[in-house]
Amino acid sequence: MSRQELCGRAYRWVRGVGFFEAGNVSDRWVDVRLGELVGSIGIGVRLATPFALLRVDYAKAIWAGALPRSGRVIFGIGHAF
Image (cartoon, rainbow, N blue to C red; front, side, top):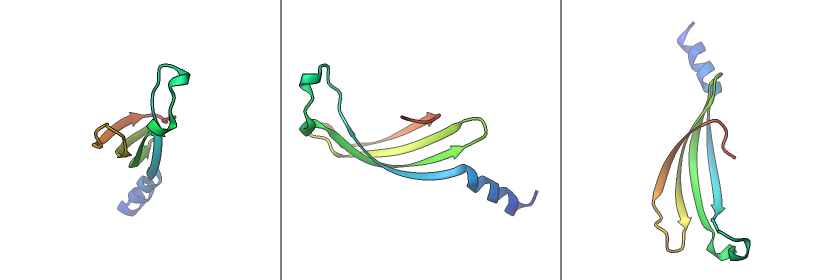
């Protein structure tokens, strides 16, 4: 197999993603406040192998109230939902 054929096949497995997410956790439904949501943006890479989907994401809080706005790298196997 030539180098060009190998690279062509590898590009089919690799995907990039961008995302925005917002959420929060509460013990009771009545304690939910939309103004207390934490939001973040991020980028990620997906490697779709024949055996499993491998994920690497980096996200950083863009609004977090009193929480720190540090970034975080997350590794995963399979689809996130």
